[in-house]
Amino acid sequence: IDGFDHYSAAQSGRMYENGSIWSMNTSFPRTGSQCANPTYLSYGVQKYLGVNAPTLILGFAYYNNNNEFPNWHRIAGFLDGTTEQCNLDAGPEGRMRFYANGAVLDTTAPMAYGLKQWYYVEVKITFGNPGSYELRVNTRTLLSGTGRTTSNPNNYGSWVLLQGPSGDFFDDLYICDTTGTMNNDFLGGIKVVSILPN
Image 1: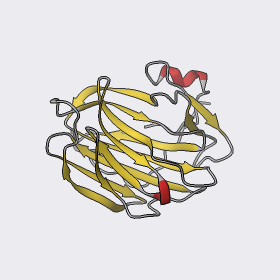
Image 2: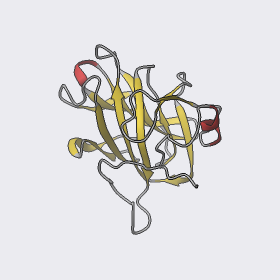
Image 3: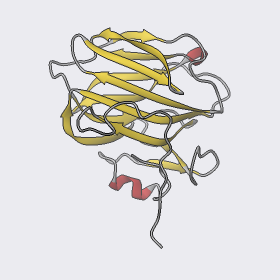
Image 4: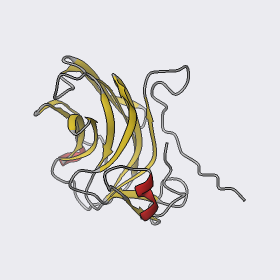
């Protein structure tokens, strides 16, 4: 989990890999004192999970601060090492889509998200050919189905990345797999509260 409230941009490099850091923003936080924008734009802000998970669940609050809808761009992705397995893109008319192995898996209707307001986005990917995918926005399921969710023979993900242009902000992030008896599926529109020692 990450609420982005307890460190500076420079310190974020201690939690995220490959030199990727967040740019902190205090003007638009969803909760807490600040939200974050990924500044390593060429390949997103990356987090190594330490496991090869056959299914991953990613949740994050998403805010697009642009004045118009952008062209398609990746906002979240899952990787096996350096190989992209499956991405979630945001694009024109407020649509979102899943993209894997060089092809579009599925696309939402318009206005899955809007401009200048927070949305809570959750993605569940089971990696495979075929695998399965599900997208929830503000706890509503907008996409679900099966298809090729990998770009290589390995049916797992070990990295998560978040990416976007300068007007995309993120807050209240969680990442789960399906193991254990708690926090093993969608968590809903959570908030991450940073409690500092006195």
